Length: 102
Image 1 (cartoon, rainbow, N blue to C red):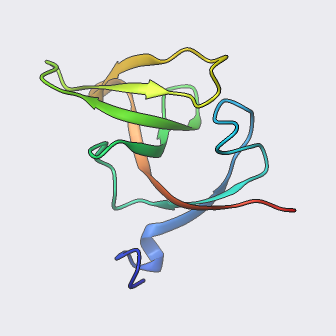
Image 2 (image 1 turned 180 degrees about the vertical axis):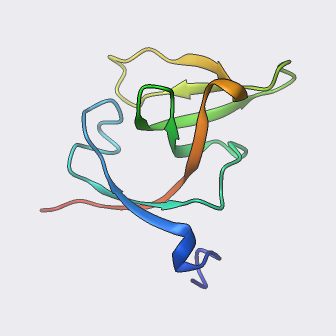
């Protein structure tokens, strides 16, 4: 709790599926999601519901956007980045840690 500054009830472990965040996150990785950190400022990797399900993506706030918007970025360059307004997505939380089976 001390390092993350979140109570255990505000943390969730989820598993990555797919390759859109490779090489950073790969299918099967476990991620720790801090549900108290929903603002995409500073930029980082978040779990969000984009209307089609939960996904892990890099989010960057787009300054001076009206309405407020974010840039949604996959680390795998085979997936194009796109923009969404704050109303079009629901940010579940910021990914703070991950683990990979060896």
